[in-house]
Length: 247
Image (cartoon, rainbow, N blue to C red; front, side, top):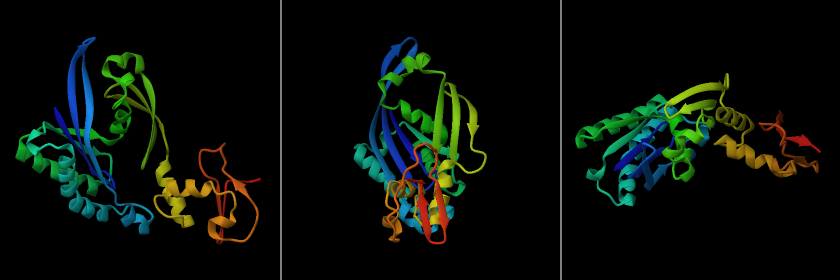
């Protein structure tokens, strides 16, 4: 069974083709091995860097341009024809509405042409399920020993603790009340002029011990990363930026 997966929830145009091979049954549950035949991603990081974050309608135009190309590349790398696809899995949310719409329209046309069923996928649930792909200990036959489980999701606009009672059965235990961690890092990086995406930029700067090497300011004071905190401590004062705590 061949599954085509498409995601346009934010600024990455992603297409993957997965082969699901059913190996029989154990304890009444299907034993399925997943083999990723191809996974192609077209990133828009450089395009959105000047804005310090994703510009939704610009991202939409890029998806419209890139999705057909990425789709063809995924087919070529997987060495299959479009007629061999059995199902189409599609991210339907959460995400940026203009971007999601591009994927939805593309898949609706493709599914109509090929007469294929569409599997709607929740973006956050997919992040959780990704932990089960290729992990022998996480096969369906072992589900009773794995669940219930607490899942930590830190993805872009979502920072959540989720109780996973079973596949498809969830309860949000807690989440950020305002900005998610990813949004916060992007905003901090934009204010401090560190570039986009914010997370990697802040992490890189936090590991520099000599502040003079950060922006070329004179001084011999050294700073080290604060490992006791869940977020970087930064103080912006005019053009001087100090990371973490002074020794």
